[in-house]
Image (cartoon, rainbow, N blue to C red; front, side, top):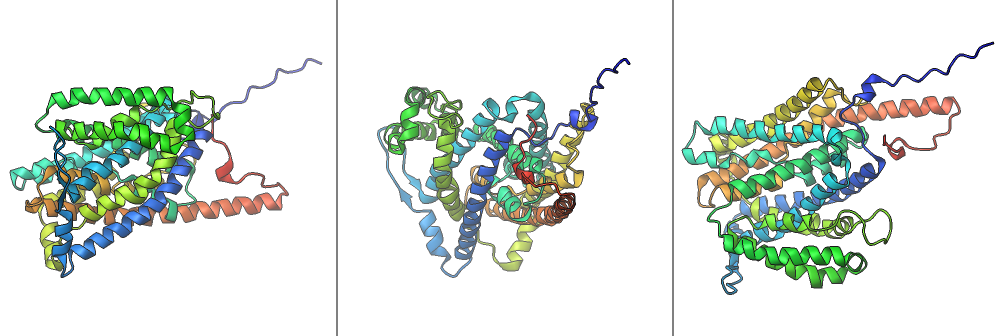
Length: 456
């Protein structure tokens, strides 16, 4: 009797053409570690923000403003280093935040899932849509107000990683892992776009001589990070004594060059090797080592201190809030962050799936993406920074924009929590049902769902 040839399994076309999937197991575990760290930082950030608002609206408001506007430092040769405490927090401490953002960006595009154009396309396009649509909506509203309001067009463009992932970690633990990966990747690409916007559109009075001088410490930083990688991975003090001085020199030169000083953090992060060259361990590069060491410094100290000195806006009671909400700047920020992020992210993702004739991962629904897009409207840290760059503290538009950022972030958090909380409970019921069915069939539950390696 002639044997029939074995039938080749037909792949599921929905999965074969999926453009938003879980990603590799290595990438999944790395992102899980970031989510855990950022969720704690988000709580500290929230407490610092609330403390700033209370102090700024208390009878002793003068003490808060006096502390924020106190100047410290001095000139070192041609370098101007006398700044207010508020500016030290915005220009100095946030450089640590941007250093971490630079490390994440380089790891994603060099060794992460975003090195694959197929995986990178959706979050990159979605992030671009989530930046462009809010900026356009802000501009459309700001055009009806004073001309100087247009300066703040980039305020609603950014997503705050710490708050967004903290919300996800607390309220949406049972969501498909692909969604959490998507949000973090989206926020990372969003940071890249925000960095480019700050560097290109908010650089004034460029002094190319300082930028030329900055090449020297940057090159030395790269040389040491590459040649002494094993030393810096073993010894934390070596990084402080050898790399930190070069980083401070680079930061000071950027500060005086006219390019915002936080960009120095990104440039230095790009100098750190992402791939392991030292032979010490298989999975931990110097970039991963630095990310692990310095993330608590960023999320637990640098960003909360910045928020404390930046979020302290005088509201003026209910009347002051109503007046601020009616201003074109605050209204543009609120509409941009709450509505613009949803329209931009969902619209861009929809276009990619249609133009490529591809589908989302079968485990993900559009309602899930709606919740993620809403959470992306929490534009706290970078939005406040762009507000500082757009308007002077004496300008009424400055406080109006900050009230808009705070209001929009709260609304986006509430909307995202309502959607994702419901979806998380939905997925929890499904998981419980599957577990009961497996127990009834006598199938041992060897792996929890979140422990199964993803495709690839």
